[in-house]
Length: 320
Image (cartoon, rainbow, N blue to C red):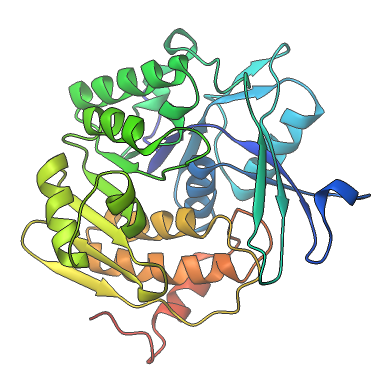
């Protein structure tokens, strides 16, 4: 009997986030707050909370640290049948030092040689990974290691052969690779993806593109041959371009408590609408989910479909 398809399956690294509160420095910290986060699993978690059948595939350490991450994802409703558990693996960690102006937030990574970076294509349950309506990947994974780059290549090849739509978020991380290396690698990976997500800053910094947001979206669409490009514009909201239509969504007002994970929440919202065949609604949901993520502690936004629907129907939140 064939297993039901997932709405979304995400492949990538999930880490533990250890943070200190505003006003404290990491080097003097006596206590750390623990959260679970990873760009791809953040997306799967948000969609699961919206009632979508979601799965995350990756590697976790078979110890209490890995179980901590798994527990968080299971609580959100994410399927973990495709997780590779390894007793000899280590969890990637990152430390966050929240700061008030004039200092920016500072992030320190400790993720080298993690289980995710050592994951190979031979360990992947391909039947499970590709049994989905959309497969979500990011530009973080190919930057982790040669293993991760080859795994990303193999995943994209298999998805194309199986005709599985691919959602790809550029999600550039300057602490992982230089812009020139990222551009060369990503230009190889992104052709023919279904949905391409990119921040305006990354379009300029990584790909060297110039122009107004609409022009950046057109250039990204031409370079990637994606079916649709979604460009995030920070406080200016976001836009989507499918080769014919351009949709804009403003950024809803919000009180910023924690910036981490907002971009992943946005991606989840867009996919939520796209899965229903409504890209414009997806853009609206993405903007609202990002605002909700900014107003909550942790990387994984906590909400539900009813709350999201009510918020996106507010009269002062209109898609242009």
